[in-house]
Amino acid sequence: MKKMGRILAAGTACVLVLAMAAWAGAESSDLSFVVTRDYNGKPIKNASVILHPVNGRGKQERGGFELKTDTDGKTSFNGVPYGTLRVQVLAPGFQTYGEDFNINQAQMTIEVKLKRPSGQYSVYDDKNNPSAPKAEDKKPPETPDQKPQ
Image (cartoon, rainbow, N blue to C red; front, side):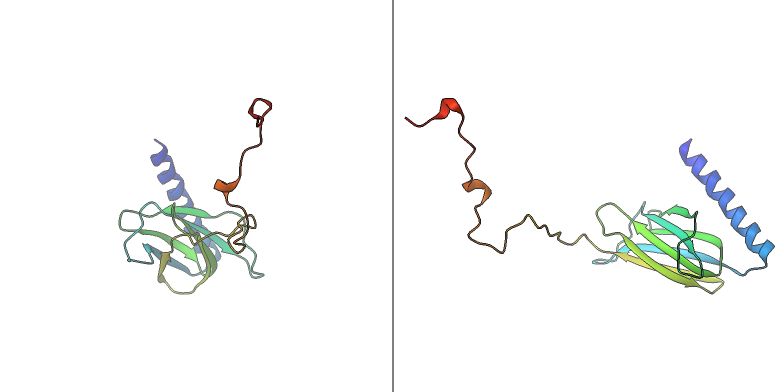
């Protein structure tokens, strides 16, 4: 039932975008997205592709749409008005992708290659200080019944 609601919402959104573009006389584009792994080119299914319009000052506008990729890593959206569009792609186990695109053709394909997460650094890691005590070297504090005799 949730899936049907999402399809209905997406369909309604498409109709709204098409109606607004036609009303404004603006040109629109049919966008296709392909989301793959950067290290082997295999598709990523069920990735979230989030679209946000960007105004002339480079600020993200309110609203937007979320699409999901199929088993081939593909999704599409028709009737996107020409202009700047912010695209974000999220998938579990991969770095978040984000980029602004100038939508200026009747049909466009946007290919996104997601990377694996890179190492994270912490100010609490003391890997550069070899004399720092290691976790296994630290002893728990003594309790009253553990006093040496």
